[in-house]
Figure 1: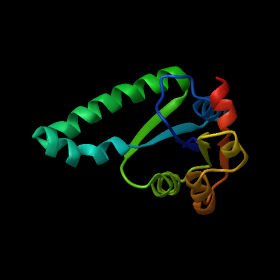
Figure 2 (figure 1 turned 180 degrees about the vertical axis):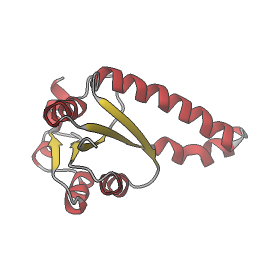
Figure 3 (figure 1 turned 60 degrees about the vertical axis):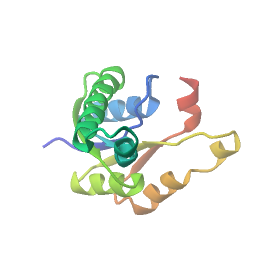
Length: 150
């Protein structure tokens, strides 16, 4: 069984250095990437159902179809050539990412930081801090500065 790298992904139309870092690491250790996406979009289903009257299950299905397309695009753009499995979860990001790393018996966890301002580049965000506190495997943190410069 190949070593596992859990990648906490943020879906974006831009190239993602966090994904690129995970792909490089996977190539170096001949590992498999488990892309974990915490679908905050699914939290909006009750509000959408209330405002549109659409069936909640149909809304969930539409959101999941769009997410699957976005994830496929992300993989093609950032993880091309890597062996990738996908986990879409709901919940608190730090909880879900560290849970996935434990359940997958990951060798590494790869995450990116989120830049909100120049000052925030000097400190880690609360989600990143929570992941670092809870992780039981080495964590590779890709700085927001790299994310902004791509």
